[in-house]
Image (tube, rainbow, N blue to C red; front, side, top):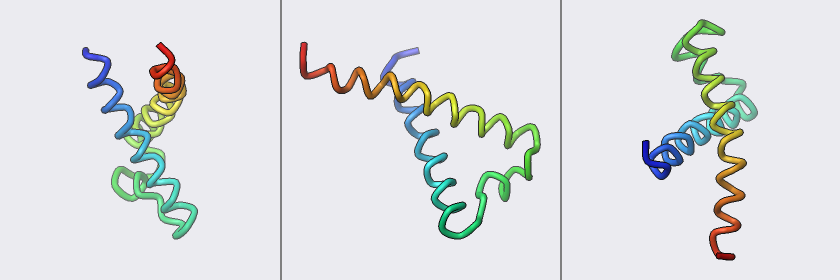
Length: 70
């Protein structure tokens, strides 16, 4: 898979996670639990994918910062 495509997919997952956390913080509304159930296997998979995406984006930040230094 192309790295750019992977970066885009994972960035979308991170944005979904950020929106969900914003909804939880401001309105006490968990969108993932609302859509897929509270801690069902599907919601847990989504939470895990969002978490892994966030960890991967840490390395993407390093690549972006070093991009201009080549």
